[in-house]
Length: 482
Image (cartoon, rainbow, N blue to C red; front, side, top):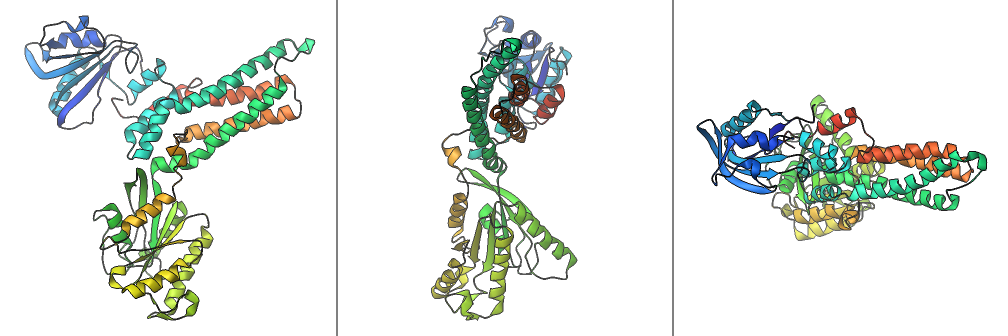
């Protein structure tokens, strides 16, 4: 794309609305818009100072297209660093297109996806990681993803990387200088201080890399698999959590034959609930495929909710080994074996055993069931009624306990971008090589090779080292007008 011409695009979502914003950026942005704008004050737009608002009409010849509000920004003090005009017009799709087509006829071209932010990056208004945070901010759907995107867009992550890169660059310069005086056998870079720096960089990189496990799930939503036998109320629970009729509820066993997913925000954290097919022995080919997918979804989930029917299993003993369970007897033991199977297969995943339909049991029956299921080691237990909503809020609070939000609450830097994560892994690998070289007293020229590679990986994150393909991939994911 040509980056020195004038571009125009709709900056608000397409479709009808109260207002729409049309953005124009480029060296001649004000000059191109001025003849098409007649201010109520009769002032010339070309003569107006930056960061001012003007009420008037967009006109083409004698025809008035719309009454608008025009914002003027002179570069470099604008979002893109160029002269920029933003036209707030009425939200009719017809009006939007009439104004955009008028400006195209006057010499603008339609902006590519992410081109305004790309120009902001190329003009030094933000670095590459901050530019990527703009897309994350636009797509944020809960408080956690919003907070992480804002922290990154304000430069928290960039500042941390820039500081490390600069310190490493200072030592690299001294080592490179040593190479110029190789015959004199002088040492400009203090090796003990360099070892301390390398150790500090390793600690910071490891912390940032570890934060990706938290950041990635917070950004995309915590996946929670709802599993259990057919017809125990999994779909009813999903509907209760989402507060809408998302899944089909039926008394017929095996109604859910595929996984159903939806997301809600609990305490500012996004949770992605997965209603799975019931786990049972079946000869139905379609249902068996659904059960296979259930175990696949369990492997992908961060938390597992195992749902059982409290009415079906009324306990007459105080433990599963009491064998006083009625009316199905061995079925309860089989259920516990299924729970153990999930625990053994996925030992690191938090497991919540939820007894549903407690509204159909007496207090004494519920009390005995609570004693039995609370004794299952390595799991958490909650009694609920998905139909009436009893205990659903307690379940939501229990889910929040499994989310590591400590770094988020402390406003620490959290890595959420897989490109940054891969670059950090590569940087750590090179820094480890530098440390090995220092431990084995390698010469400066060999150390310099690994240091340059580490600096390259740092530079890729902030965009100091980049290429057209990388920029194309990043900004292709932006929306038009941003």
